[in-house]
Picture 1 (tube, rainbow, N blue to C red):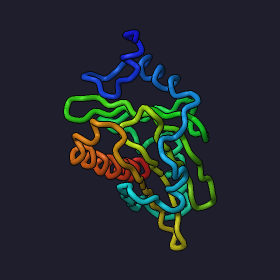
Picture 2 (picture 1 turned 30 degrees about the horizontal axis):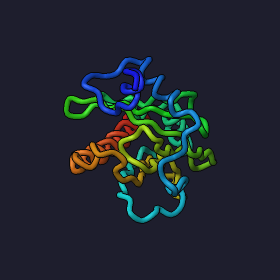
Picture 3 (picture 1 turned 135 degrees about the vertical axis):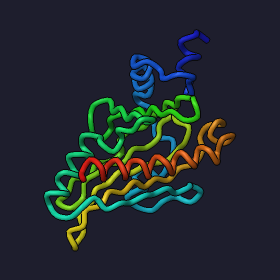
Length: 195
């Protein structure tokens, strides 16, 4: 096995990997399948055996607020966090691959997903990503802005997942903690962006 092949199997790094490594990881997932069966499950029924994580927060009221929230999500504002980078390969399009680079406890994780679906309706806008082979977990995560009948605009992050890699199993309580931290941080960031 060549050194480049061994390096391509890495999901965890001791420092942030350079951009060329991230884009190489994205290229390596061309043609790969999702790592779970219930593709689209965040819009339907969540399969048994997965852990659910969600957070929802009000971002304001009215059509203007909804449009600002839609624009913020399209611009990936909820993911502008100090410890997370959300890097879509070709923008928000169904089938586009996404790399999430995150820092936890002094390590950097590189997780690869693909956009499963987009929702663009008068009172709902969002998308879901599903895990690919180079991911510590398997499952799906949805990011959605909604406006209800009372004109309240909310942003919700919802996911179902389970470990896919031995590192996730070994550090399961820590991994779940960071999953919950991530969804809360995304909602807070959206509230700040729209606020």
